[in-house]
Image (cartoon, rainbow, N blue to C red; front, side, top):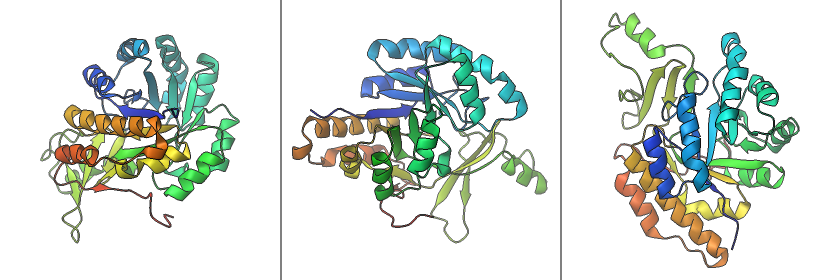
Length: 310
């Protein structure tokens, strides 16, 4: 039997975390808005410790995102925060800023370090650069195609993580763009809340059938993709390549949706790893996902089969 890759996901609460563990998730990325961006939910240090307490007995990993844009004030508070994470027993930190790496070396030696710089993590030379500085995992940009993913996996000893399902971030600004626009329109109070639960969209005049979710929080403005990656039909290519971690992004999805998706990918991974040579895709896995997929969001293959991205 082939060693199974990690099935990684997100959680908006402790209740959803338990639910997705039951569905077959192997690991979670959680965190709090002061240090992490685009999180499915808010986990303060005491809740992170509670998540570790739920996960450890089941051999499930807990990773904490510290992927915010670090100003001086936030950077100064990092050592204390990372120390709390170490005390809680988290398995790894997801980071993009070297300030996080420095804090981790001082406060949490030995903790896993997952380097994630969003769209700039595009080659194995950069992966190996961060590996020499202590990173244990390289989170690949979603803009890479399958050939580039496979080449990177073969050319680095770091664990490689790839997103296989869910929405992606296509634009971020520290500025409150929606709020500023409404002030320009002299209607600052018209929208009220602008968080991810509000249900706001950006729609292009020439492509009104595509809706891009947009929200604002303490970290600024986030515009998300109009469709969801869904690689379950072609998952065997990533499994055969030896990708270490497969991520299902649960941001802005219901627990019911995320549970259905995790169960489908869990089944596909288990069947493949039991006997790769005899593996056959089962239509019911995709049908289960389609049954909960929002009608206004298409399932796509992202950039995996595009010849050129940049």
